[in-house]
Length: 343
Image (cartoon, rainbow, N blue to C red):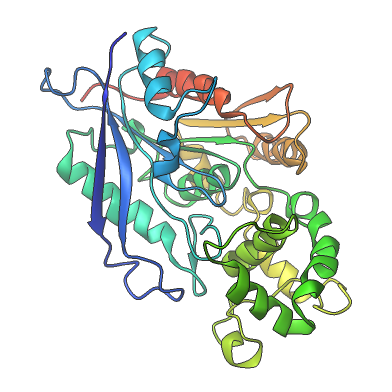
């Protein structure tokens, strides 16, 4: 089997420096270089693989029983000629609140700018890449899928190919069901806004074990920090974002939730129609049993693509949301058919 190389690279971001949460500006991230990189002096297409919520690039290298890590997967796919040789970059865009959604937010930092500008420029300047959007893809699962959709939709001159596996979309279905659970769960940390502030202080650390409610509370906090930031909230509430519901009753705050909906991919197709038409590949993928209803979101999204005469590929598979990294096989196979591999 042809074996590629993993380079653990890093640089200190000017964009992420002094971000609102005090997260590090120096980020380590893996870069996969195909087998021929050191023996053949040619340039390669690049794929940016975005991890999901609470994930970072280095975690893709983890080894586990009966599962490939990303290094092993890419070696196999290239050796079996399922995918073409590419450079694969797996960024670190995690935040204190669990994730950035790869978006610019006054509560977390400018992660869209970090990826599309700084990171892409760094990779192009330090590796032999084909510097063209038609040779640069962005893909991801879950929050990484959301990031892939948004980055390509808004920046087709940077990312010419976009693939989303179970990406966050149709927020009424994928997030709304968790709001009522949050109200009951957060009360173990106190009353009202103080409870949220206490959770952030008590649980966002290395102390274990975490309560069963941890992920749902963190997810609502993480999404709020990305979709409805409020820097002034630090003084009035003890945290720098707005929740999309009343902290005591759970009643939906339509004004705040509408801010979320303005960042929902299903509501942005018409706005970014021209950009989407420029993309060389749009591949939308989701499991039929997705626990967050992201298969439904995907169906709505591609329906709107069709209505706006935007080309796309859409597939569903017989599974849920978790442990579906095997779908990367299909994603890399499809990217290989559309990405430009020659200068």
